[in-house]
Image 1 (tube, rainbow, N blue to C red):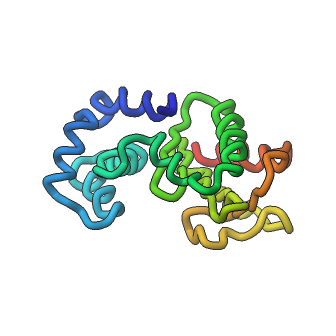
Image 2 (cartoon, rainbow, N blue to C red):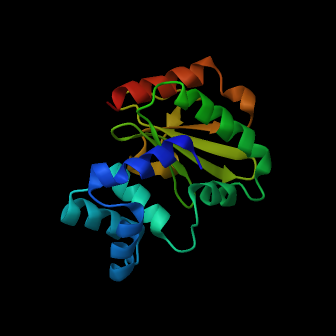
Length: 180
């Protein structure tokens, strides 16, 4: 399991008042149809922050045994993209220890106080990297958010590990700095 995610799970009782197992029991009793309904319930009814609520709902689903399983499933049939994902995480983790990496069914959110990066294996040959860079103009490489909608302001399409270069890293670092 990802070290940041394990730290989040370990800190959950102190930060939210309950363990992951206790939250899972509460969510199973409610049986929400949509991920967002569970997240909103935890935020509104229990005062859980968005990052913890999202992680709790994601990990409490019966068909998702762990964060590692979620990521593994995302890259089934797309294994050649996994080194890009690993290169992105290596860079992001170097920014500081205040980052939470939250795998979901089809993507991975990278959160500081709020999400600043979204990593999604979009096709068998491409990862879409969503960035939160409000007010930053688009370029040929730093495109509009595309399918990410309002979750991100920009998208970079990656097909090679070589594309995790200084320019891309500077945009990710800028998004990180804006998310405090």
